[in-house]
Image (cartoon, rainbow over all chains, first blue to last red):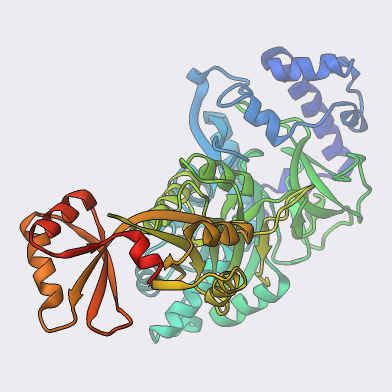
Length: 433
Length: 143
């Protein structure tokens, strides 16, 4: 089934003509409403009139997460706040988050994109959707929620956590579809089995999983343990949230990017050169229809590969391969994006601590665990156990408060962690997806 | 009248304490008394040694963070109720004991109790007034 057949199956020429028309409009609009883009284009020596083909987009310099940080919180908004009806935020690379805004029409666009995604996943208005994405500043929860309502399905706004309750409702409410991070889906399966629940016997038929990297092996395990079809969804708050791209049930090989709303490119993460379809590169998105927070050539740091070949489902949209890595050091811990630099700013915010630390990520019983080893400095060392334990607790609390993730903090001997002259390698990621 | 105690931070792992004792041995340091406070992932080794300065230098050269704490050493006859008689005085003066450890002196007649008090000076005064023997640092280092 296709939610918006007219657009999702447009012949390529028509789709590209629509993209070009919308690209010219958005460039024109940001040039006149967002100071950052006016300077970006001026400095590159171009004007909106220089965009005459889709390839001309390459004349425009990239926008990076740093640019978002420099314009915190609302500097890149193209609409006055009176037209903005919603704000979301995701992890920034340091203390401040990345903020995005939506107009009423943006929310409608996003809801329709999520509804499209659900339909591509085989869902209809008759489905009951158990939404275990976190509700709040994170776009996952509300994005999926609005999409489910737009489709006319019944949505259970479960959010994350309370695993036992989730398992109870999975049995009692009989949802036919679930949205979650893939690792949480596996955790639910495991916890349910431990509680003696027949997790394969639930009414669940489909799972829509995203917000963290996963693998084909994890897909098979989820499918076996829950007896469902598991599909990959992609999105990021900067671009709109979930619903930028999704796998279809027919193909299950790459995620259809909704190109009537976004232009996707892949570039060499080092040189910034555009790489052709089929080759690995960093995903770069331009939003074509967003009003409040348009983005031009945004570097996602997600590594993927584009497939232009048509899909048997009938959609003409380009597919992107499952994201297989990052071109920066961002970690995804239980669906929460974490940058080592954020952890460093938390440590530096605590009197007496030095930024000598190591981050160790493991996956224990299907869930990510974050261990933070911090060297005891001269200034915090005390001969009282209590005082040191207090520092451990303080670090863990600040990490939780600022980053939203739970960390186990371990003090280690001074000068024991490796020192780095060039780029520090502070992360040991032991997860095998 | 206070005794100089040094403390070092140790991770709770095999070989952790061994490395510290090796550093002290190589520097020809004799340990007079010690106590190890431990938690699930770390420990604090508290030491009274014959040569505090040399011990500190040797430990620091090997990357240890050394913390200094003044503690109080009290000598009491090694018999039933000895420690209790000290605690009565301390309790009466509303002084808090952060931690304590003990050893028996070479002759075997006296027990030496090391205290970390929240109010060390007050404790010394009170104990001396009640006739207890508070040992000066030098006595302990050269014991």
